[in-house]
Each structure stands twice: as structure tokens, then as C-alpha cells.
Image (cartoon, rainbow, N blue to C red):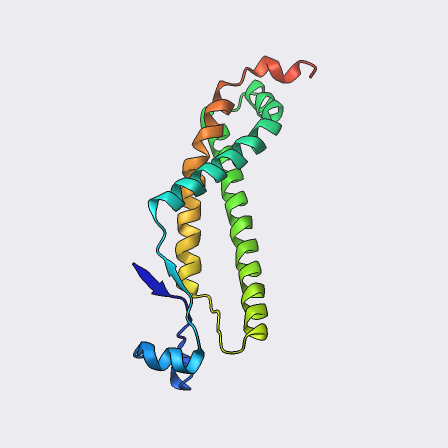
Length: 160
């Protein structure tokens, strides 16, 4: 199923910039070409899961010694799991913030370059993407979590 990207804020609908009833012909005539995207499919989520998992796994491997020290100091499984989950949440949140800023900048650049094309980002889309990204990040954090829970605390004190 495809949907058309665009913001139909109440202010735009009141001023007649966008036909609030969704009449496709009038909308295309007034605004020019529309950009259509597919709803996220399973394949896209699997790819996001793989990329996020590998990124978190790499970040965790670089800090494996620190996790070993935490374990040696008595940090329990819950504490280590929360630490890995927090790392995943921060990574996903930062990535989402960068993606939104870059999207807005690209939208403004496209709008300036081609006045008949309007790129708009809906708040609901950002929220849906953020929720999906956090869910993917939570699932992806399970990959490095297994490695952290199996680390031997004695390895933290060995010379590299």
C-alpha cells in the first residue's frame, strides 16, 4: 500500500494550500508531482535490525573490558542488561534526531530547487518511526547482551 507524503496541517488546510479533502487531481495540479513511499515492510525492518544489531555489537565489543570490570565489581545481570539497553536507546535516539534534521534540510533544499515540489514531514510519521526504531534497537540489543553476560570478569584485568 502506498501513501503520499505531505503535511496537511490545520493552518495549511484553512488557507487552501492543500486540499483537506484529499482530491488527488487538484493536489497534483497545484503542487506538482507527489512523492509516494511504501509502508515499512518486514524486509526493511529485518535490514534495520541487522544494521542496528551489528552497530550495537561493535560498540559493545569495544567496551567489553569495561563490562568485565562492572561484572567483577558485582554488577548483576539486570544492571548489565539495563546498561546495554540504555546504550541502544541512546544510539537509536541520536540516529533518529540526525535523520529528522537531515530530512528537513534535504526537504528545504529540494523545495528551494524545485518550487513545484513540496517535501513535508508529518509529526505522526516521526513518532511511528521513533517507536519502530526503539523496538528494533531493543531487539538488536539482545545480540550484544549475550556477549556481555558471558564475559569473564577476570579478562578485564588481563593485559590486552
